[in-house]
Image (cartoon, rainbow, N blue to C red):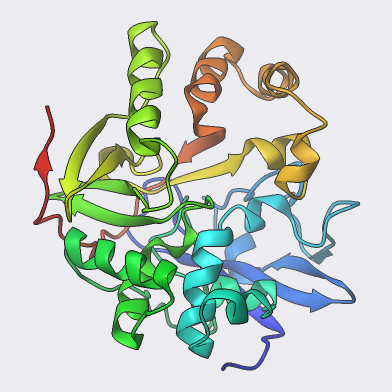
Length: 313
């Protein structure tokens, strides 16, 4: 298993850029993490803040907001419980209850998760060389790997194949796939589902669409005899990478437990204060994505090829 890292370099896709640049460095500090923009980044005329309320564009170290151990806009790009399970399995070989006893630090999760993560940031050990962490497999192969992880039988090569989907958030199993230049999050069914969970989410998206709420394109397909919900990535408009922050970050919470003390009306208030068009942002928020994006242009990196599965009726 890798030893804990003390630093990670943040690479960012700026608006209209075709490749990432080093934006700054995260460093362990006491019981948390602080961030500093790089001098080369600050000297760029096109440089933008990663999220002005937390990381204003200025030199020097910036501590995490009060009550948090890491700036929320950086934490948004880290794996949630599903991605953490994959990374722990790959690094330690432990599965099931044994893996539940393992605790890795936040920088390890950032540095070991897939580069095709949510938003327009990535994390590297080097400030000078960008090396994307990406693997290619079919949807059926990824689905089989996710089944094996949940069954406690994951082989090393399957764990590696799952790396791409480790940093798109959420607790349920999911993988990243693509059709041509269109990228999707594939949300998987599990044998433990008490009802057709992915079909229920698909119905929710369709209902929102029919009443005029802006939602990403989606459809249900079949893989390994089970339903899979494909949701087009809203953070890849036109094949570009878009910066984003989550609703949790905008509300100042560090985890989902904190969100229990807030509400969608409060989030809409924050959006109206922060946006030139509160109505537009409110529609995006209500779609269920709970993330607010800004556009930036990426280098298109290899994504998983969607070669299996057939559209359902």
